[in-house]
View (cartoon, rainbow, N blue to C red):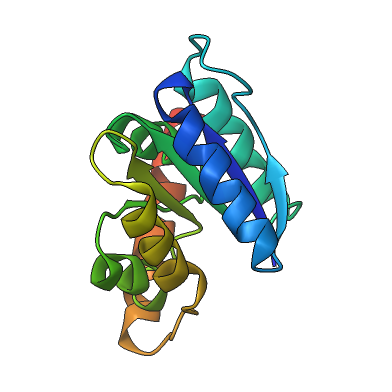
Length: 153
């Protein structure tokens, strides 16, 4: 599985730790930045990760900022992307099983490295189950498409 990872400066250190962890676990990891603790704007990183998921260049994404909220909102603006903010293993697993979320977001000021690894494992270890949830995901996609069509008129 090819995983995109990105962060802002608030989460640089956690991103680096999770990147190393995923590589050690055998994942193909692509680092979208940031590459230091110097200030960067998280929307730039979030949009690039979301766009590359939609283009099929990576399978899933991990985005981290101070709270995880900003990167989730930004990534969710990419049409077709579902980003889930999770700080516990149950939510992370359900993000995949029920919601087919392509991106997991976390907050470096909210979660520590060891807990983040457990959340990451729960997310990456799960696959979309379909079933009754598929209908709901389809409803979301159809509504999103309707909004996009309205905007283009």
